[in-house]
Image (cartoon, rainbow, N blue to C red; front, side, top):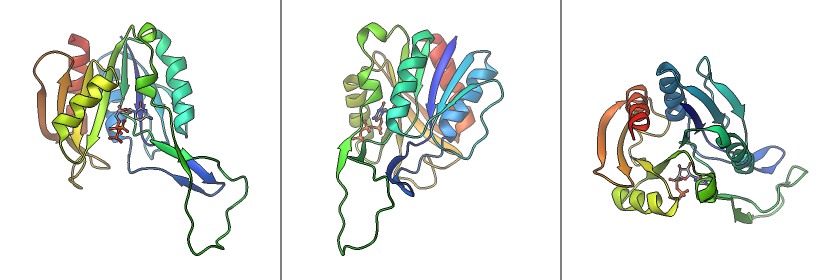
Length: 208
Ligand code: CTP
């Protein structure tokens, strides 16, 4: 099978030296890429800026902004069997990135932000001849919010993780997730190294 996996954060430029981003380390997405390679699949990894070496054998596409990730996903999903959107895509970007460094001359400064395009939601029905796996990072009402995202973003599977615990999930080597399906009972994977969770998720994708 051919997997397209997104990983890491995106960076939305404010000016040549500043950007808006998030705490995503890319570890979960890279672990899934590794597990998919290990299981004998072809893997295209679309990665935001992270401090990780890509697993041997993946085809890496490096991007920085949400717009670049949007273009890369639309270009690379054409040939895939599974899309795993584990990237933490920025929801907002500065309305205009300044070409010059913004000077500190105001007491109060506010930034005008506009929404980025939702990549998962933008995949048309016609394009979706592959399995769509979304992620849901939540701090509260995890099940309710994840199920809402599963429907709103038209996913086959959504992997929900509670990001309120600073020792688990974001930036950590471990995660604890509940996997919700379009149909069927959810599956909880208790706290485990991301590598173990990744292997489990690849198996699920193979058997759905
Ligand atoms: N996602 C996406 N495009 C975006 C934002 C998110 O495709 N512009 C994807 C993520 O890769 C993930 C899923 O949507 O697979 C859910 O992302 P998450 O950050 O949990 O949710 P949001 O849609 O951003 O909603 P909110 O921030 O309100 O929880």
